[in-house]
Length: 70
Image (cartoon, rainbow, N blue to C red; front, side, top):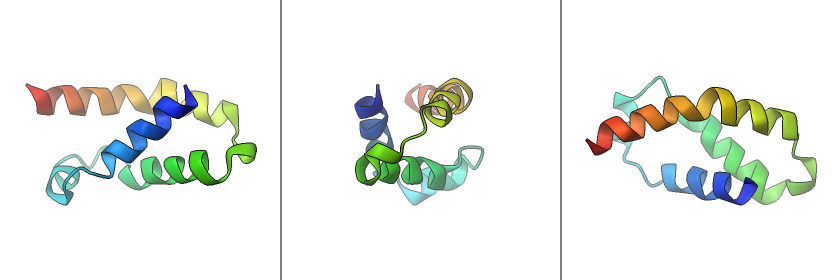
């Protein structure tokens, strides 16, 4: 699961600034920060924080992406 989150976070860095500015409800900088933690501070990962991000924040991101694809 952590590797999938890392890939997801890396993918969001490739989104245009225009796209990100149109979807301000998503805290893009936090996604980038999560990626950095997953890559560079693997032993310091707080699994409860990761779970909270997955259950609380990921659904919002899913809606934005699904909307953009339709």
